[in-house]
Image 1 (cartoon, rainbow, N blue to C red):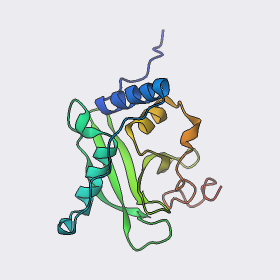
Image 2 (image 1 turned 135 degrees about the vertical axis):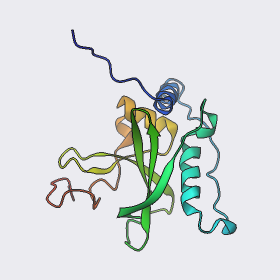
Image 3 (image 1 turned 90 degrees about the vertical axis):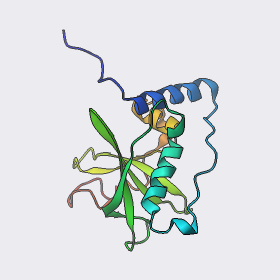
Image 4 (image 1 turned 180 degrees about the vertical axis):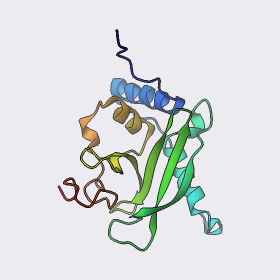
Length: 170
């Protein structure tokens, strides 16, 4: 008889699911405080700062073990939706059995946002699929529990889609 269980969750996914369930039960989001600041003396360490913001938003300091995050400039997506001058930041959280990939960009209100990258349903290219800005959001995504997440606003405009992908501009 085939197994009906999914692969085991890694420690970040497990914590995300737990916090999403807790938020669903109590209606209370986990309080994490303001994002870390980028200081003038941090010039040249923007990738480090973006890593720290993602770690903070995923409450990495409160998990039972540290989150290793790899950050690099993204060669495909712009940092700002309206421009091509600066690259977005690609982030990966590696685990023994895979990784979670994120894209950091600024939204229309100049807030740093994170999108989970996953294969497009139509062209199978890795595109911004869901905006994830908290550990609870990641848990909701993993559980497919909340329709209110709504996807990423960058999904339909991502230059990572195949040229003929019908999802572009849908």
